[in-house]
Length: 72
Image (cartoon, rainbow, N blue to C red; front, side, top):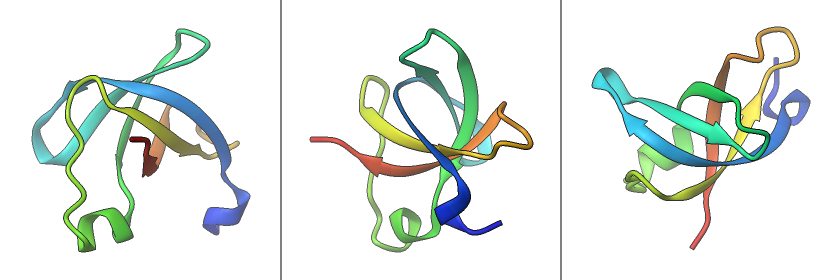
């Protein structure tokens, strides 16, 4: 599935786990697990607890996602 097919949702980082897995609390109070997309890993974009992020979520498995963008 391409990145263009993912649903873009806004959320906030609530917890950082081992192996680059982040817990993201979405605007609708649902918590999902997500990891950084490749460009964010490549350019060493740091994400910490409390950051506002945009998450791409698959329509097939809405419990996992990709962190696409960190808001300033």
